[in-house]
Image (cartoon, rainbow, N blue to C red; front, top):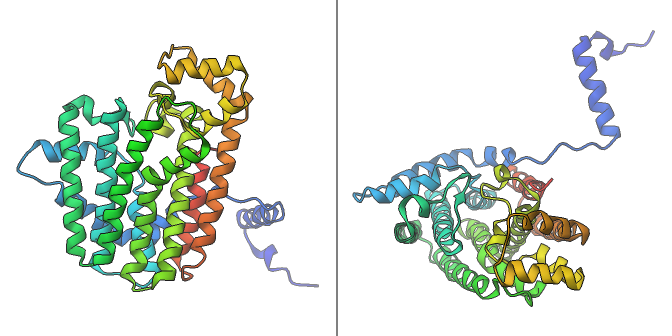
Amino acid sequence: MSYNPIERLSVKDRKEIVLAQAAEKLNVRSAPRIEPLMDAVRPGMGAVNDLILSRTGSDVELIPELANHLIDSGGKRLRPMLTLATAQAYGDTSEARVLLAASVEFMHTATLLHDDVVDESDLRRGKPAARLVWGNQASVLVGDFLLGQAFKMMVEAGSLDALGVLSDASAIIAEGEVMQLITAQNLATTEEDYLKVIDAKTAALFAAAAEVGPILGNAGNEARAAMRDFGRSLGIAFQLVDDALDYSGTQAALGKNVGDDLREGKITLPVIVSYQRGSDEDRAFWTRCLAKRDVADADLAHAISLLERHGAITETMARARHYAEEAKASLAHAPASAERDGLMEAVDFAVARAT
């Protein structure tokens, strides 16, 4: 009689083995998760969070009150995790990586405070936007304070190359926001114009956050370019998904009102695709809502129906997946590590938010 070790297992254990084998045969993959990346950088992120808390401190009570309103409201802190993970993948575990990761998060938080003023947003991460609680002036000024603290930490990190990369990104982000102002309400905006906007306003910080990692690890120009390209492609994919979710997601998933882009007159890829594929009547609808900023309560539902009819969300998500694959191809140049594995899954996680 042959010996079968499985027969000696409990019914529960045998059931789990059978299910695992069936899943493998069916090539069933679990949903991508952010937790592997979080686990890989957990000690560093603990230090980053402590540093963020200390650097929002000020004798001017309004500053920590307003800053922490946004900082404590959630968010995965993906951008600082990029800095920690790429630094560690290239062998750096110094205090400098913590300083630069916190700098990246402060840069991001400052842009959110400024954006909500420019866009007149009501919600951010599911909470009232800071501008509604403390006003536009305070929001802008506290954003400026956070930028100042970010640059202070960059200097403390002691890398002129990293300082150069992040300061360049700061200027590019501002250029991107101005470009978005120019393209707002302009239905002649092309896909190329749109990609230039998101490359600057979103992808630039992702690219910089990833590039400073190999700088700290003294990894050389080839590694810097690979991680910069990885961050840029991930940032573009991330923004494409956000723009799709603005018409197809939920307030809980977005942390803001669904349809804000429509109400704010923003020209995003879903709209560009729908406008190009639509009839004269469809184009007249987009012109009224976006170019003339005449949006009625029922218009969001009609906008969503047009996007579905023209395959605009599907097209946008296809582009997001394309850039996600580009990101993973660039990331493959990093040394094999838990950090690289976590980043790979984080790319898929960023795109899967829309499913």
